[in-house]
Length: 50
Image 1 (cartoon, rainbow, N blue to C red):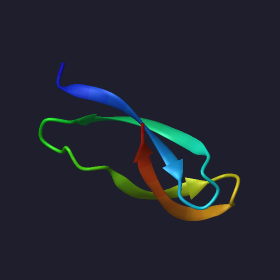
Image 2: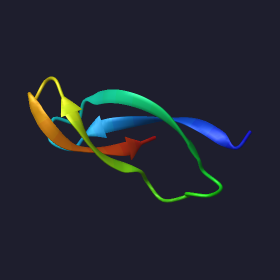
Image 3: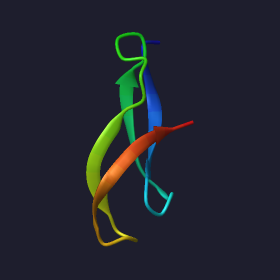
Image 4: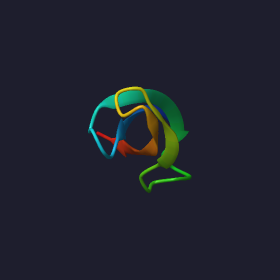
């Protein structure tokens, strides 16, 4: 299966807030998105974690 479920964690508070899917064959690098963190109460960078 090409698409895999990944988890996104806030870089400031380290909480795992979001899950999404990505094609690891086309994009092997770690995903980085700017999303809202409800614990920090602001938009922060969320990175893909294991």
